[in-house]
Length: 428
Image 1 (cartoon, helix red, strand yellow):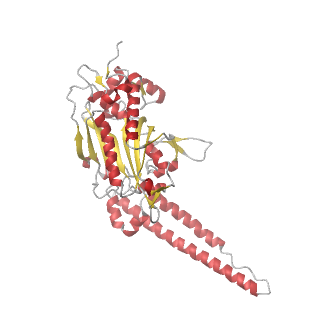
Image 2 (tube, rainbow, N blue to C red):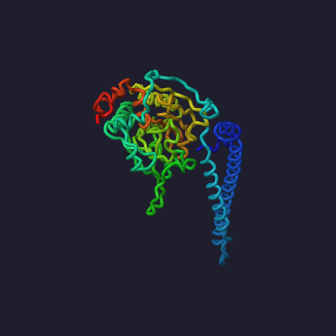
Image 3 (cartoon, helix red, strand yellow):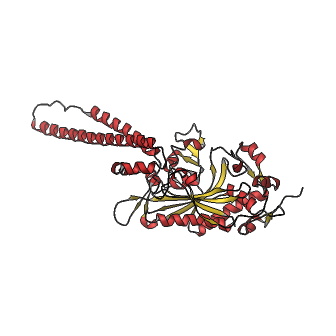
């Protein structure tokens, strides 16, 4: 959530920043509503304070008069109804203000340009594109080599689901465990959070209300607290610390989690998103940092490097791109850098990690602060990154490490876990 003081003090600058992400007319409507509601709220707060002062003053005067009078005195005028009406109006205005503020995206940093995918900028590349041609697509390899059973996955869950089998399951599990080992070695605390979360966690992360329809909600008639299946463990890591205060000495706080991720987005709608590239359930490891504003730039660079190092360890060609404001997550202020792996069969890149810096946007929504050695508590900064999503790493391995004889080399760092150095078509 944005700092309301930013809108009060420099509405024009706030509008200009928001216009990188939203239609200018929508920005003007939202800011006008917020300014008007804020003025109403402050007016009501003042009127309530004045009414309370008058009630106390009348009560004191009545008590003094009663002490001095020998005769019974009529009670003072009861103004509780007036006060209750004002408080009811304040509750309504505050709810409307919170709704308007909650709907605003984060302000992109000055160096984040406007526009969508067409304005993204490639910063660097690592490795070289494989030269094998033609390349058999990963879906065919996965099916024919007995690595992924798409038919039985669909039988179990419907369209957009699959089931890893045999060496495919071993490769998937090897990837996840290798990622986990790398993050522990880098000083991150390993978490295994619940997969079903309360809706307050979705709001805190900035995913609700805008993306409420993109997740699976749980229908539970025995509970009055709505729940949903997490779309990313970022939501759980952040939500676990709602309403908490860190000591500055404990920052940065680094954590990571492995979870399946559940999303309602349309699966495999395009030819370059078939197989395991896009689905309703996939495995992902997420890294996260809570830090001071001053420590955030270094934390961001370290997290990008952490994600990139995993791809390098797997020997996969990738590029890192700076996203324009319109292509970045609504909750992220600074950069969102996407690390994209090369997919030879489609001749393009696919995102396998996005590393984002939210500033204090999420911390305000989640009420997460830190206490400096001197002075009052402050909102901290949050950063998150995929490291990595396996559903796109496995296709990249099957295509980038494909050999002329049709076999696929298993990355060296995974061979002990997988139990083989190459994947081949099983003998019938």
